[in-house]
Image (cartoon, rainbow, N blue to C red; front, side, top):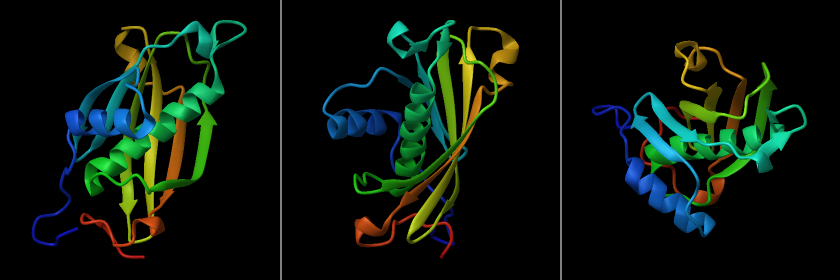
Amino acid sequence: MNPTTGPQILMDALALDEFMAQAFGQPLNWTIERVDLDGVRVRQPTTLAQSRPGGTLSGPALMAMADGVAYMALLSRIGPAALAVTSNLNINFLRRPRLVDLVTEARPIKIGRNLAVIEVSLFSDAGNPDDLRTPVAHATVTYSLTLLGTPPSSTEATE
């Protein structure tokens, strides 16, 4: 981080969407609702292909969304860096996720020279006011930045 300017947003919603579609070779099925210094918020409709018996959203779908949105929160701060790679993902499933829109919020906790840690909250949103106050899962995702070569421009702390 530049001590005089603080953390900055280097990629907005449009830039993140374009980068992710290019990096993964296809447009992704989500809407980036917010990109700011508090993090990134993404909405994804769920499908029956992501379901488990009993009408619940699968754990792998939640983990994929946690990783993807955490990655976008990191990129929003360091710019396009395809070589920032997941080194750890720890997820806690808190309650049964419904087959409604999955809203994921990711917030950078620390972006250092070698590692970045992102906190992620996932919500089932059927349009009720309480839906976005009660997470269905919580994750912490760590990214290795060592393959980038040079430290990210918005480093928030040194390691």
